[in-house]
Length: 128
Image (tube, rainbow, N blue to C red; front, top):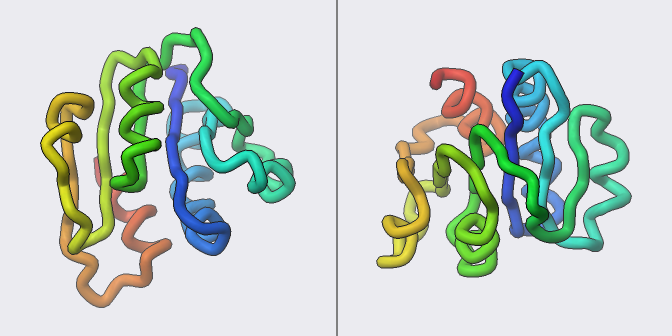
């Protein structure tokens, strides 16, 4: 079993679309995923039994950190979080900044193609 942290600071609807990828990560790791997101999203997070809601980084050491957005706040929280591997997955067309390569081991921005964004998140992580 490995510990997984996900960081995501987009909109509420985007978090709903990320749910299938979160469920996959929890299943693949054999335990609930810690999720750092906006504090106002906690009621939605409570509806996901495979997610432990967090509003900011803690002292826990994770095996893997997966960040699903290109926002500065997410990169900063990723920098502060302790994880053996840190991965960034951004939507196609998102701008990669200079600091991303200093924080993340891998940066992925595959083409969306004809996929819906939730399918894009799920396929990208289930194919690892």
